[in-house]
Amino acid sequence: MKLRLLLPIAASLAILTAGCDELDLLLEPGSGSGGGSAPLSSSSDPAIQAAGASSGAVNKVQKADALLQKGLKERDPGALRDAVELRPQDPSLRYHQGAMLLAIGNISEAQRAFDEGAYLSKAMEPPGEEDTLTREEKQRGRTETSLGWLDALASTKAQFPADSPEWQRLNKEYCVTLKLTKEFEYLTVSLQLYDNSTCK
Image 1 (cartoon, one colour):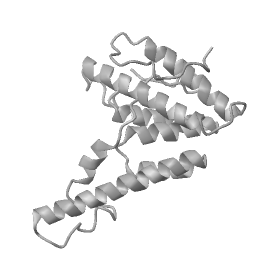
Image 2: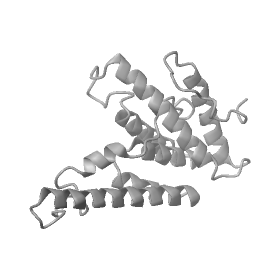
Image 3: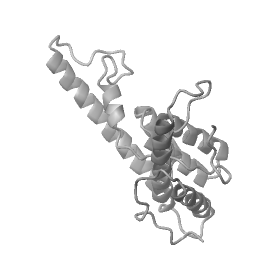
């Protein structure tokens, strides 16, 4: 099933992760800074190499987090794109990128960023890989995607004045996603922390 953003691009899925999967990815041999082409350490001691990999992974996470904050504060889609490039396996960065693109009216690119986040959250299969996920995986992925998308919309919305067209676009998407998420029969988390005061 293809999930689409519901308004111009409305979404009903997501999870805001802390990048743990990315740390695992970055700890793989050859995945250090420099695109994975340079060795992480000249030592043949696995412990020293692992320490170098861990340091590089933490450095990438910190840089991506700084770019995320910069992208939100300065309303800069380019900084969010750079954060995604540093942590390509983190769906939360895709959702923030999508929310900022939605805010500035780039609907097709916002949809693409959302879809990529949903694939990473296992809310839906990537194109050409139908029926690879179990029902439980899809339900968990849809819950994670909804919550992550809500978080991204809320944090991006906070960067704009409430009377701006950007805020209005984000708020409309936020309210539709919140309503749809509340309808998930299998939802096991509380939505009380999500502010619905701007939703009619």
